Length: 108
Image 1 (cartoon, rainbow, N blue to C red):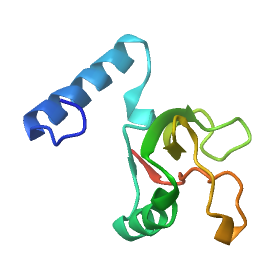
Image 2: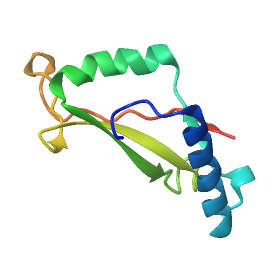
Image 3: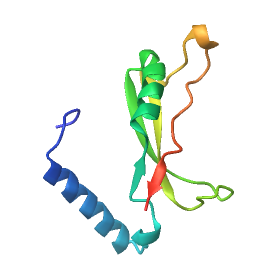
């Protein structure tokens, strides 16, 4: 069920199935991102800053652009949304769109 913890065995099966799926597509998973790591402190600091202006957090899959040092590798983008649209920062901080969070460390 969405929005709840899942059993570890389910998570492990999902990860294994993803790797198998990607390999079946011809992706060399030894050279492709399998997970993205964020430090707990960095992520919680950012979440505490932006989530008061949001009602959901969307996690998008993405790929680093050609000019980036990690070009061609997949990553995730954490993007706060409010009422189905990208969230805006508090007017106290100057307003404007809330910037997504990334720059985690890809594994392997």
